[in-house]
Every structure is written in C-alpha cells, then in structure tokens.
Amino acid sequence: MSSVIAPTPDGVDQYFWDGVARKQFLLQKCSACGALRQPPAPMCSECNALEWETQEATGRAKVYSWLVSHHPTEPDADPRIIVVLDLEEGVRFVANLVECNLADIRFGLPVELTWVEYPSMNREAPQILPQFRPTGDAA
Image (cartoon, rainbow, N blue to C red; front, side, top):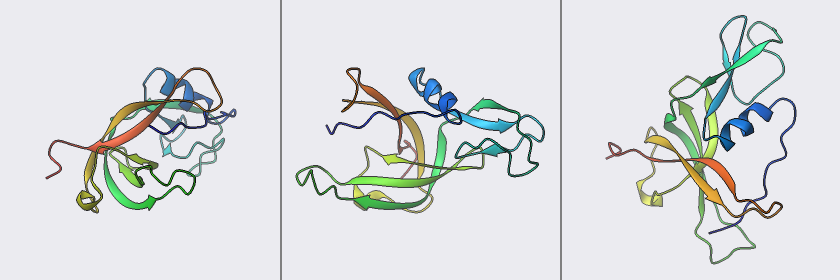
C-alpha cells in the first residue's frame, strides 16, 4: 500500500479533518441560508454570510467524472482512480475510487464512503482518508 502525506489543515478546513479523525464525513453548511459548500470556504457563495456549521454527509454519491493517475515514482503501483463525485447532498467532492476495476467505472456509477488507513510519510500515526467504492447495487 502506498504511503500518503498527511494533510496540514488550515482554519477553513480544520473541521473536515477533525471529522475524518472521528470517521465523520462533514460538509460546511451556511447558517444563514442553509447552502452546502464544498470545498470549504470562509464565506457563503450564495448569500455572503460568514457564519457556518457542519452537516454530516450520507457518504452516498454517483461518479460525475474520473481520471486515472499513474504515479511516476511508483511504476509498479496500481493506477489510482481519482473521481469527481456528485454527493447525495448536492455538492461535488474529489476522492479516490477504491475496490473498483478500471473496466467497471462509468458515469453515474453509484458509490459509497469507506475509510482507508494509509501509512503516513510525515507523521508516525497512520492517516485515515475518506475514499469511495462501488455500492452493492452498482451492477
């Protein structure tokens, strides 16, 4: 399994990584108008409010688009499938697609959240990351 560089959260996305550590998939929600936003931002793009809260996402999504990454420093590693997802909540999210053959990926493929632990390159503790895999009804 490849190792990853652990993220360095800033003030805007700290909540997300705190949630990941607890295996909670959190989205930012505007306190004024209720709009969800991803990626995290300090201001709502719908109403310009600065106040926000979090909402736990269901972890269900459909593949909107994807690309296959072949890492040049790991020539023997399996290619990574990177997907842009339409989350059930109505926002998009970028993640890795795991437990899926390249031949099986398609637009609209239903996927679900899974938590994967990777060795960290810059911390002693492993890094947990939200990843997605095809659902049982993906056929």
